[in-house]
Length: 326
Image (cartoon, rainbow, N blue to C red; front, side):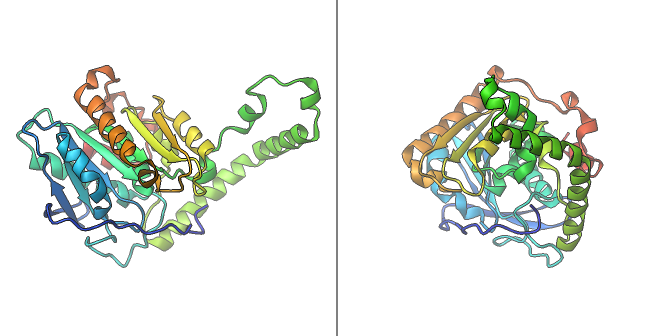
C-alpha cells in the first residue's frame, strides 16, 4: 500500500494575474506561497481554502475561482511544502499518502485567512480539496473546529483500510441455502476466517511498514481512518465512477466511517480527478450551491466543537495540532 507510489497525472492549472500573491509560515517554520482572490460582492459569505492534489499547485483552483468569487466567496489557494513555489526541503520526499506535515500546511493556511480577516467575527471557512488534497482536508476537519464545510473531489483513502468489513459483506443480506453452500460463498467465508485470524499480525506489519517508510521519506504518515471518524462538518463528495485509483465501493466505505453521512455525487465516464472536466457547468453549480447552503445556514447542521471529540482516538503526536486549532 505504501511501498509503491501510483502514477497520477499532473494538472497544475493556469496562472492568474488577478490574485494577490502572499506568503505565510507554518508552525514548524516553513514558508508557503499562496494566492488570495477577493470576492466581487459587498457581503462576503465566507472563504474557500483550496487544497491541491499530489504534484499539483495552487493554480489548480483557477477554473473554479470565477464561480466562487461571483457568489460572494473569497478564495485562498496555496502551494503545500515541496510543491509549486513553496519552500523545498530535501529532507522530505512527497508521497500520495497523508502526513503530519500536510495537516500543518492546511492548518497554517486556515490560520492565515483568519488573521487576515480578524475583524470579521462571523467568518466561515470551507475547504475544497482534490485527490490527496481532499483527503488532507477531511483529516484537518476532524481536528480543526474552525472549518465549517468541505467539498472533496476524488478523495483517495488508504486503500484496503477503507474496505467494507468482510463479515458484513457476507451476511448483510439474506441469502438462500443454495447460495450459502455455493463455491463462491464458501471461498469468501474461508478468506474472511483467514483474515480474522491474521488481522493482528497484518495490523502490526502495516504499522511497522508505515513507520519505516515515514523514516525513509523524512515524514510521519497519519492514519486517515482515525481522523475521518472525527469529522462532523457537512461534506459533499464528488467522485468518478470510472476512477481506477479509488473505486466507488471504497468511497462508500470512506463515507460510512464518518459520524454524519456526506452527500455523494458520482459522475459517469469520469476518471480520477477529471470530474470537473466531465461535469462542466453542473460541477460549478453544485459546488457553489453546497457552500452557500452549508456556510450561510449552518444552523441546520450539527454543531462541531473539539469538546465533543473523543480525544483518546487522536494519536499522541497529533494532539499538538488539536491544541493549536482550539
